[in-house]
Image (spheres, helix red, strand yellow):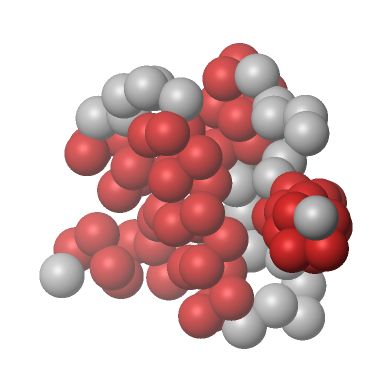
Length: 89
């Protein structure tokens, strides 16, 4: 009995910490993806992690984003001068 109580309590803690109760619907996630830009003060590695997490959320909801679109969205955060330099390379 004590063991069952302990396991139940642990499960509740894990659910509360890791289980997302409200997942954004695919249209909202897509909107976030297409408007995805580098936030001031955020380093590139954090930006890339956020980008990867957003793509993972979409994949988990069976939303398919073409590779070309992923690339364009990722390059979209660059200022125009830097974008042209990257595209020309």
